[in-house]
Length: 298
Image (cartoon, rainbow, N blue to C red; front, top):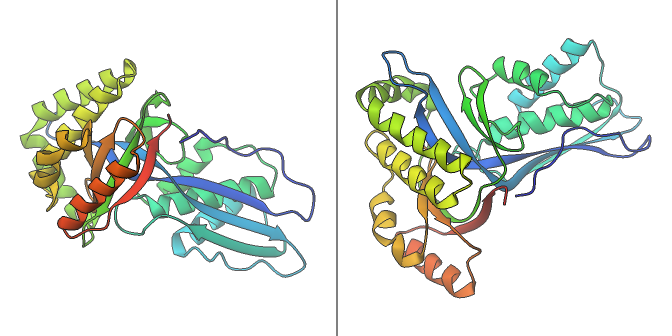
């Protein structure tokens, strides 16, 4: 996935203005930032080349209600209140490739796309601080407001460390049935983190080392370790099968949406038609349709 910038100069009057934000395929790591009795939940989200779009075309009609839903509408209201602005007349249009409720950060991506569109409407420079302030008022968030990997405290909305754009994978993944209410399982997760704090500490240290050394295979190994730790508290039905066949498909590792429904392989290169066919047959044998996407920034 290629990094994209924030707001730039607006197009000529009368032209459409757009905001775009990528989603995620779950996380490469989710766990405590550090061991202790009150751990913070830290994530290294796995950006994917799938997006949410928000478009605004100035016109003579009064502003439409934002068609993205309550969270995006709230984000727009908070943005306008912050800057003392009023929406000009015009027409909104939205589109998303992100599935809701499975671990693709769809609602956060919708919010960020809305804010990026608003920055352009009013010719304001993209300000991550403003985006974080708005997100803080709405929901726990992934780091899709950045165009790089990051170690991020999703509840505190704090970027602990930026991890750059040097790592990328091709993926083959599925969506298992069901949904997970992150808020409802928070206490369950925190108890699990306290019991396995040392294992998470080693996992996170290895992940950060892999990023620092630009070593995708090391990052994939630690993503697998993080997924295996998650399996003890919020298990995926297909995890054992994927782990058993990982080497057969030449995958470097496994990723999951730790509080979602996604699971898949981290592949070191673009799969050819034969490998796509084999992976699709394997996932179909497990009762699922396989999807392919590029994740990360390489």
